[in-house]
Image (cartoon, rainbow, N blue to C red; front, side, top):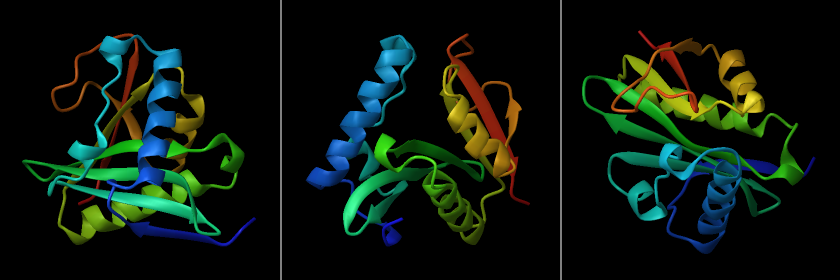
Length: 153
């Protein structure tokens, strides 16, 4: 495994744009567009969001973000690991960073929405202590979505 570094970075850089484009294409291959809740890199650059980028030997290979919501709720967003780097628990490390930041900022709970055809993602979240729940935030209840939550307090 190459040297791995995970840090909060601006999403407004070509390498992160490429990761997000790959993520969007992967989601659209499995889920109807109206049930893909993409967040653009411009939205990810907002003050309410912190983006973590994993780099292997300096090259961006994975990302994930914490989006802050009212009421002490943090949302895990834009989780993606390039196929070439899957199986090395990079996603789990990013989730750990997101959770640590949410705890440090005093959030009561983390939530997320993922697709109904993403069992590898479910494994990452369940191993990190998330449990399935009903719809969160303003997401619609649909056959295409699976929701998770984790209490932090």
